Length: 55
Image (cartoon, rainbow, N blue to C red):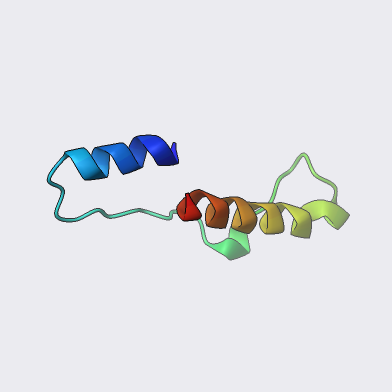
């Protein structure tokens, strides 16, 4: 996904991008995960987000 977005942003004259984040970090969780693994979900989310934007 990163490569696709990077290609679009470099090929198309885009002046502004608004990236909506419709869910706050306090709302990350999963009904499929046990209560003791909920923090792990938030941690994985943040790590994936960081890795994505580093390219």
